Amino acid sequence: MIGIGRLLTGSTLTLAGGYLIGVAHSSYRHYYNRYAADEDLRQRGSIQEVFVVGETKTEIKTTRRGKK
Image 1: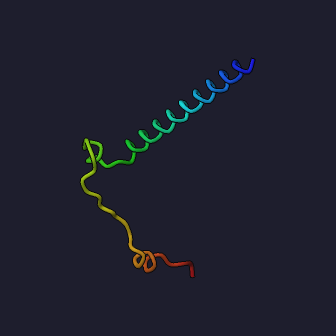
Image 2 (image 1 turned 90 degrees about the horizontal axis):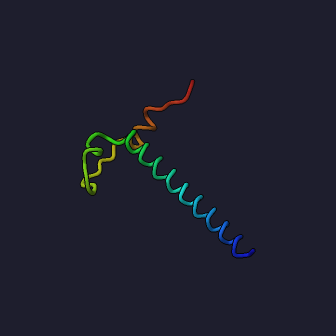
Image 3 (image 1 turned 135 degrees about the horizontal axis):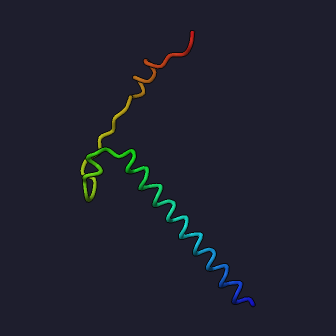
């Protein structure tokens, strides 16, 4: 009986792990296709250049003001 319990436990953990890996892969692919730029979707292989686009800290401080 101990062997059957281990077999069922191992099978359950294996199925749960496979399910979680599938969900993670599917979620990553969905959000990558949704938010990636067109050039990134066409490009195959490793990333060659990275550009960071955003506000600097000084721009954030000068443009966001509280209510008066």
